[in-house]
Image (cartoon, rainbow, N blue to C red; front, side, top):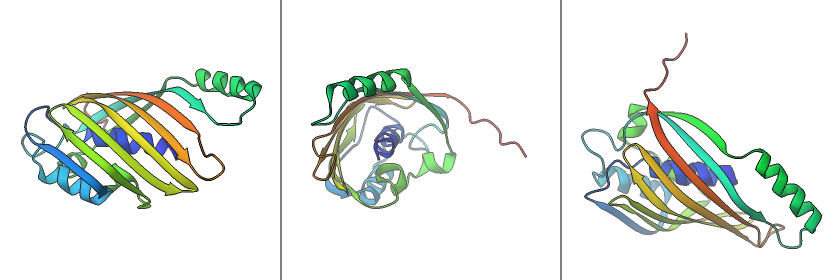
Length: 185
């Protein structure tokens, strides 16, 4: 679930092209409504919402805590997370995806998430996404973006369910690194 949140929120940042001009500002919106608003807002320049190409995203978990977790296990988990940091993911954003992002980019495919708030424009982004699963996962993300990069802080809080009170804080940096590699036949 956490990887999906980081990917969805991170991709939302990638899908914007310019730090001037229009602002998308929605409340209680679905991923589809966000995708349509971003596409219609003319936030991009020319025919693309962003520059298509190969993107690299670097994710660092800064904090992960669970209430009631034994201190020894908490320390063991901290070391395991540190050994995997930072996490990098490369992804090709196609011209079609750059031209018109779809709902999957913003809130995933299962429809369990809504944006309590979604503000994107003039180089800044501020999002609160609430997902219903085995409890309620509330994710807040804020940061800056340009046509070829973004930086943001993401925090999540789980309410209800077995992981109630779990907190994760993540720092995400991404940038366009060039054209997508040609597919091998």
